[in-house]
Each structure stands twice: as structure tokens, then as C-alpha cells.
Image (cartoon, rainbow, N blue to C red; front, top):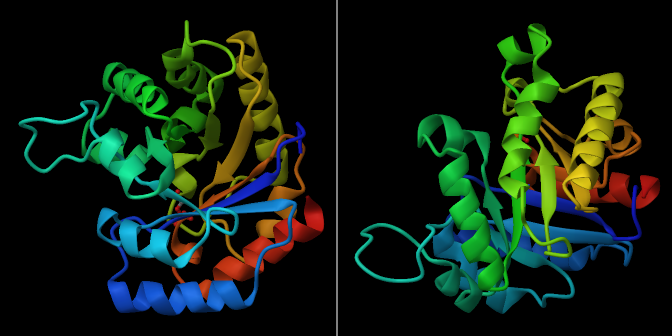
Length: 248
Ligand code: PGA
């Protein structure tokens, strides 16, 4: 851990999860509460936010959304606003996830607008950054991360913010960055954040699972994990929380 804030284990369900499954998940998680020094968050699909907000107290599990639009209300068919997310009980919103950047073509200008509107509505963004394989292999990782973090230029210091470093080649592939790569890259991300005036948590994401969580979470500069596939089953998600409890 690099600062005094609690380690965060956040589950990003992506486009997975229906009501009954989520209620079973809640029961299992409630039977095994996380220790005080580990913060747990879930980012289910929008349709499950209200029911999960009714099931958990914010003290036990914080809720987040996987995305949102950059306007508060109006004629934006199919979009969801920061105000609606607050109303549904969200504390966090994931912004800049590589699936949004690559599939939905979201770039820095839109991400910055979303960051501003998230902050003005009391949401804490989890800003995702990460390089593609060819960028890592051609030695451009830091350049790419710096460019992605440039959305934070001129942002007031002291805003609530979490960053997630997720190498794109590690997401959903079963490959993870090596501990050396994680340490080196997290050190760079913290350094760049501090140059921009921010001292915040930096999560690692990309194929985190119960077998590799302890090693990844023990790396210097890693303040938690953003977990996709392994957060879909309560059993594997709880094992990652346990690993965090032991290393944090
Ligand atoms: P994964 O996804 O754990 O399934 O690799 C992580 C993420 O996309 O946040």
C-alpha cells in the first residue's frame, strides 16, 4: 500500500448478471464479511444497482457503475447519467475502461467530460488506463499511460479518484503482468499522478484470480485490484478479498 487509504477490491461484472444470481452472490458475501482494512466494491450492470443497494449497507460493500454518459439528463436515448447513478446508490463509476476505449471508441476528450461530471455529482471515478501488447513490446508503455493520464491535467488536487492500471493484454486472457512489470509500472503511474498533483490509490487489473492475487497485491505501489471474470462467483471473489486481507 502506498498511502493510508484502505486497499480496494472491486468486482467489475461487465455484461453479466441477472437478479437471482446477484441475490445468491449477496447472501454468500454477507455470510463472510471482509475485514475492516479491506474495502469491497461491486460494479454490476445498471439493472442490478437498485437491488444490490437495498441488499448491502455502504459500510460493507460500495457500489459502482461500469460507465455513464457525460450529461445529467435529456435526449440521450440509451444513456445513463451521474445523477441516476447516485440515485441508485453508486459511490464509484468506472471510466476509461479499455473495452469502452476500444469497442465504443471513447477517447480522452469524452473521458475528461465524464470525469468532471462524475466529480460534480459526488461520484468517485475509477479511471482505467493500460497499454496494448504491441505498445508494451515496442517499449511505449509509459508514453501510453502518460497520455491516458493527461486527462487529469488541471484537475483540482484533492478530488476523489482511484486509478486502475490494467494492461489490455492481461484483461480476460489469463495472462498477468509479472510482479516486476507491475512494480515498475505502478511506480511510474504513481510518479506521473504525483506530477499532476494527485496522490490516490492505483489498483491492478487484468486476470486477477484467487491463485495470483496474493502475489500481485503484495507488489509495491498496488493498492487493490479491479477484478473482472473472477468477481462473477462469490467464492473466487471472496478468496481474492482474503488474499488482500493477508497482504494489506
Ligand atoms: P478480468 O477483467 O479480471 O476478467 O481480466 C478485468 C477488467 O476488465 O477490469
